[in-house]
Image (tube, rainbow, N blue to C red; front, top):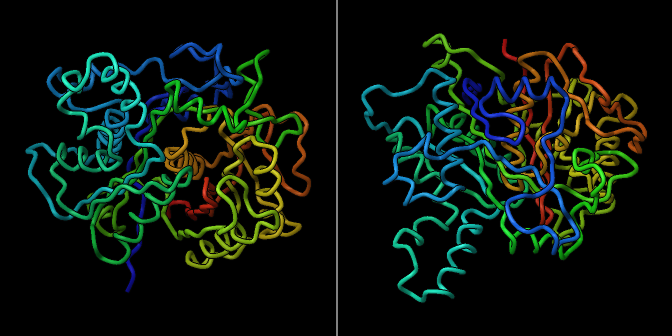
Length: 410
C-alpha cells in the first residue's frame, strides 16, 4: 500500500521575502521584487534587471570558518532547509543522525557563479590563488551534501539538475521516496545563485531575457501581450515532506498533501518547446493521473509562465487542452521574484502549498492585457477562493516538463 505524503514545513529565500510567513505576506502586498542589477556592471547587457536578494547576510547564518567552505548557492540551500525544519517543528535538539530522513534538492547551475569569480582569481594569481574549498563548492550535489552533513541526515540523498524544472523534480522525487517506503521524511527543495556577469551574459546573448528598462518592476509580465522575456532571479525554497501518519502522530501542522508528480521531455529542441504542447499536456495529465484527480477537480494552477512570448503561449495552449472550456484559476507568479532558474519549481511548489493553506490564489502581476484566451488568469489582485486541488508546472531548457499536484490538508 502506497503511503500518503504531506508538507509540514516551508523555508524560502526570495527577493520579496525570507521565510514562509514573510514570503506569503509579500505575496499579499502584490509588489514586484524586480529591480535594476547592482551586483555587477549592467551596461554591457541588453537586459538591465534582475530579482536580487540584497538582504541576505550569510554571517548571520554561519560562523566564519564555515563561510570559507560554502558558496552562496550552498548558503541558500542550508538557510532554507533550516527554516523549513524549524517551521515543521523538527529541529533536532541533540543532533543525532538518522536514516529515516533524506534530502532531495535541485539546481540548474549549482556553484557556477562562484567558479566564475574564482577563475578571475586564477587568471590573476595562478594556481596558488585557487581556494582549497573550490572543488567542494562548485558541484551541484553540494546542496544535499551540506544539508545532510549539517543536520545528520543519512537517508536517501540526491541533487538533480533538470534546468528550470529542477525544483519540481526535487519535490516529486522526495514524494515518491516517502510514498514508496524509502524515507519517512525528506527535505525537498532547490537553490540558485546565478547573478554573475558570465552566467547572466549567457542568457542575454540568446535574447531570452527582457529588455525592459523604463520600469524594472514591470519587466516580468506573465501572460501579458507586452511580455518580451524572462527576468533572472536568485533564490531558494525547501519543503518538509512527511509520511502522513508520522506527521499526524506528532501533531504537525499540515500545509498541503502531495498527490501526484510527473516528469517527461519534449525531445524537440534545447530552448523551444513543442508548438503543439504534446509533452507538456502529457506531463500535466500524467501528474493528474498519478494523483487520481480529474482535470475538473483542479481549482488552481500555478503556471510556469516565464514571461517569454513563445513559452507562455505554448503553456496557455497546453492548459486549454488539458482543462477544456472550464479553466481553473491560473497564476503566473514570477513577476514577484523573477525566474531563479532551477529554484523556481521549489519556490512555486511552496507558494502553491501556501495558496491551498490560505485558500487564496495569488495574482499575476503586470498582466494588464492578457493574451491567454480561454484561461481564467488571476490578475490585478489576488482571489480568496475555495481550493481543494492545485497543480504547479515547471518547464525548462532541454524540453524538460515536470508537474506536481497538491491537495488541501484534510
